[in-house]
Length: 194
Image (tube, rainbow, N blue to C red; front, side, top):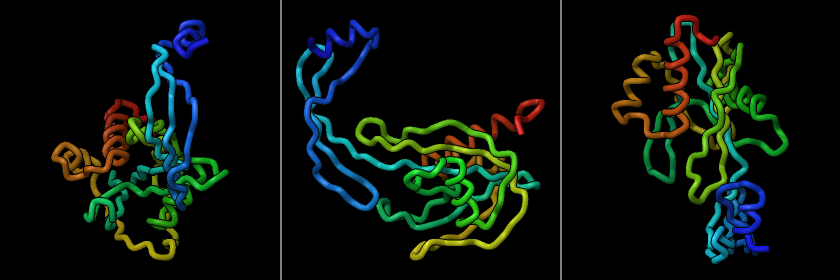
């Protein structure tokens, strides 16, 4: 039975069946594969796929309605970016616990009243990375616990200003844009979610 017949039978409108998969690169963070797939019409195509363990980002709001940001150099873009605290999802670790750890490590902040802001697929055309987004209120501070070779500055930016920065194109990072706008929307409700 062809993939097209299986698709029609299962009720799934669109599907690509993997026929074979070849590892092209296995690195410390990413894994690149070249897959041959059968399309829903029975024809074949090649798909380049970057497998990534996923990530987590936390929008942490202070009592003064400021979001905590980190400013760091991002090598692929050769730029210094402002982002929400975030990191790679560690194998076997719960995304929320991973997010709490990243927030503490990068900013020294400990949050309370965490809520999910959903998942983000940063580039679904070729990458399988999923970023889990969370929102919390800052409860108190401890000390930063930066990883070896990690250099960043912590900034507090008022939520309204952060929204304007997204709209002005000053925060190009997708996870940061998404979480900032979601938090602003939640906080604008008559009874904020948190």
